[in-house]
Amino acid sequence: MLTSRARETLRGVETVIIDEVHAVAGSKRGAHLALSLERLDALLHTSAQRMGLSATVRSASDVAAFLGGDRPVTVVNPPAMRHPQIRIVVPVANMDDVSSVASSTGGRQPCRPGRLHLAIYETGILDEVLRHRSTIVFTNSRGLGGKTDGTIK
Image 1: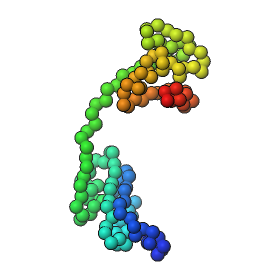
Image 2: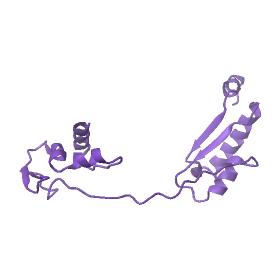
Image 3: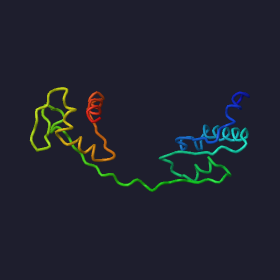
Image 4: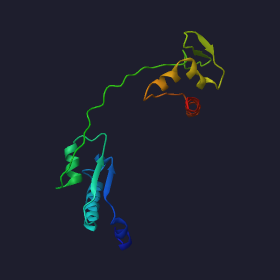
């Protein structure tokens, strides 16, 4: 905002979004941000809308006062997260020995090295992923994660 060219570039700003606003509120960086926002507003015909985002802010009203100053502020604070339903499915009986995979029919199937990602079919893991909106699948390595992802897709 120091040069005339930069000022001209910023004259069209309508909204400023500050992600993780809790990390700067009440700090030296926050003071610099507040000053910069005021300087930006001085360039504009209409003050820019300020949106602060944070999933972990402790005092939303304090951060709202920091970000909004004497302007009207709306705090959007959705209700607390609902409790997720967690079910753990392990495709092998012993994660140290992946030579056999649990079958969805209750038996064991031999598993060749490098083929563990295919166990998502036998154990019903793929069915679980497809049946639910959100599913987390943990793997033992990045490579196995990539293979499993490719198999699911």
